[in-house]
Each structure stands twice: as C-alpha cells, then as structure tokens.
Image 1 (tube, rainbow, N blue to C red):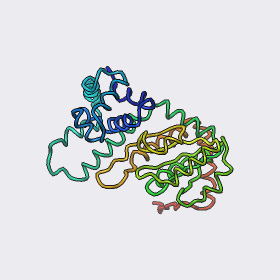
Image 2: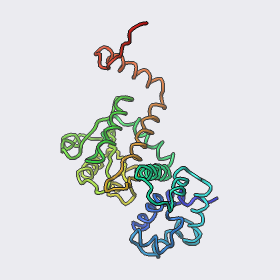
Image 3: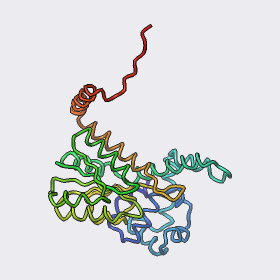
Image 4: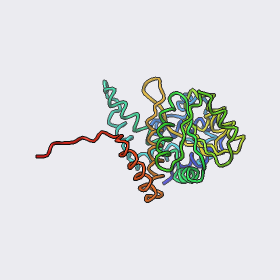
Length: 288
C-alpha cells in the first residue's frame, strides 16, 4: 500500500515553496484532503491547481486523483482515533466545545506524529547528547514549550537553559557560541523576529539549531539543521501547544531511556539534596 503522507515527508525538502505549503496542509489535514477536489484544495491553501498537480507528479504519482485514492486507502487502513472521532462527530449538530477541542487535539498530535520520522528524532537525541551546552529559546506562546524542555534536560543530563529571546540577554551569550552549542528554538505564527535573530546569530558562530515550528515554510527553517514540525491549530485564535508539549515529553522520555542507570543516579542525588532541604511537603498520618 502506498503511503502518500510518508511520500510527502520524504520529498518535501525538494519541493518549491508553494508546493511545500500544499504539502504542509495535506500532512496536517489528511482526513479533509482525502475528500477535497483539487480546486477546493487550491482554494484553501491559496495556490493554483497546477501547483498541486506538479506536487503529486514530483512525489511519484500520476496525478491528484491517484494521490487522493492512496490517501483514502491509508486512512481506511489506519483507522486511527482521530479518524474515528471525526467520523463519529461528522454532520452532528450542537456538538459541545469540549468534544470538539478533544477532536482537534487528537488531530494535532496524530498529524505531528506523521510529520516527524524516527530518524529525525534519533538525530535530535544525538545532538542533545553531543552538545556541551543547550539553550532552549522562544517568546510568548512558545515559552511553555521551551521551559518544559529546558527543565527536563537540566534535570536529566545537567544541560538545558531557558532563554527568553524577547529579553535580549542572549546577545551577551551568543558571541561566545561555538559548534559545541545547541539551540532548540520554538516559534509559531506569527513568528518572533527575536527568535529568528537569535538563531541566525547562533548559526553564524557554527552552533547547531533545532527548530520546533509549524511548517517547512516557517522562517526558522532557513537557519535550522533539524526541523520538528508540529500542528498547532486551535478552535479559537491561538496557537495550541498540546502537540509541541507532546513532542517535548517524548524527547525527555527518550533522553532518560538512553541511559537509565545514569538517570537513576542523577535523580537519586537530586532527591537527596531536596530531602535535606525539606523541599517537599511530606504528609504524616497518625498511627493506629
């Protein structure tokens, strides 16, 4: 069975900018695209039908019709939770916002999983372990993602610093960056210029850059060694960080799993210090 989503992911770096926008939309919305005409898809993405046809040719299909049939077959065979939920809710009126939001977040996570390969994740883990210093940067809605990642990496391997790109303090840091530094930058539309300036300056000093963003047309891509695309669509006006947090949780888990004994030893030392400080509230119960 063909896998149109994987075909798109494998070929996306070779596509034109307009074709990348189409590919991004398909990867994030496979259920919808499986039943859209080429004219409807062109209207949604804001491109021409010719661009879509050339895209399908470039990734090995005879045209949009063959590509769409492959996508429909993939969705039928996958029968993932997102697909089932969309089918269950389709054409039902007055579905409450709670269920709609759950549907949207499941979709975001599933489409994010489909956009990031295991090989890419392994490269990210290698970069994390090989770096001497790790700087997790973001602004505004990306801060919780960067904070969660920096905190997790600091606890696990002792390297992971949160840098709020908006504050400008990175200027004093970046002048000393070398190839031993790793920057993990998070930014979603509307992309933060300060984040882009930060990673541009870091790349100029041979630092490695990993970007957590929403598409291959993101301005962060031009300065990134590795791109981790996450679907951040929401039912309201904001960028949803559920899928990026899911990605961060995976990275933290994977880092811990690479050397379980080292993780246990480090956690034991941290716990010993916290206990000595009486940091945690320890509930005591009367004896019977």
